[in-house]
Amino acid sequence: MASLLRLLGTPTSIAFLILSFFQGSVRGITFTFTNRCGDTVWPGVLSGSGTAPLETTGFALSPGQSRLLYAPQGWSGRFWGRSGCDFDASGKGSCATGDCGSGQVECNGSGASPPATLAEFTLDGAGGKDFYDVSLVDGYNLPMLVQPASPDCPDTGCLVDLNERCPDELRADDGRACRSACEAFGRPEYCCNGAYGNPDTCHPSQYSQLFKSACPKSYSYAYDDATSTFTCNHTDYTITFCPKSTPSSGKSNKNSSRRPSHEQLEDEVWLASLKASDADALTIVSWSTSIALQSVLSIAVMIMLVALDHPLFSLL
Image (cartoon, rainbow, N blue to C red; front, side):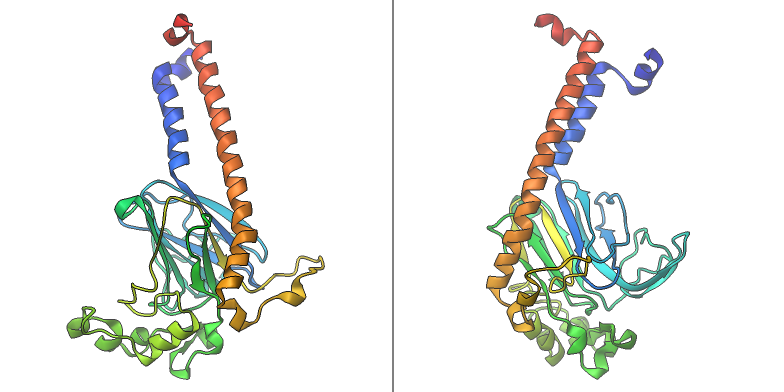
């Protein structure tokens, strides 16, 4: 016991370490990933420069499955879904869309190969607010919905299957993805570079307008900030792939006949009802988990200090 304590440090430093860990977890937020696609999706994770990596950089998500990731205060980065992946038992392989080029399930610091639908976040940014968006600037591969847990913050995403509407000249991966005009043609006016590298000279193209009309809350080209970037006070987020779909779980769904059409998927009323059903449940779970964690860690610190006859308790 004594040798272990020498390794860990003084009782005070141990207590401080535990409390610091707890405080960090409270200040951080939870991302919940849910797959409603009919096939497995492999989310990819890329942390921004200068921010700590999350516990994983890539993982598998079966139909109907969810997974939580915790991000610390000030984290920034992006998420996307990889599809059509083939990994062997050792985790080596590649994906048809959104592949990160690592040759593994884990992306290990590499980003998505276009075309890919991206969810981008900056936590605790200017004014202490979270900034978030869903971007089609690098093309599209999967429908995606981002839902803040706070009811005061807007949902965003692209709920429509753009692969069905993709022009032939942008079609990629045998119709499983839709390229951006920049990737397809490489012209400065589409890529917003060179003489077109500022908002005064780079304007929406017929292709970006196609994306925008289908997914009005998503980034459609580089300077599409005004209607595509959203902010929220510190909260948790749910990221859903194929939000309009309900993977079969072997049980009947009494609401399946009421699943909205493509037009309804773009309606704010449906988005609000989806937030009420899913995000409220997440908020309750996150709050309960936080309270339980606080209780356990507080008790652990007190027991440790008492067991070590810490001077703090000589005053009681």
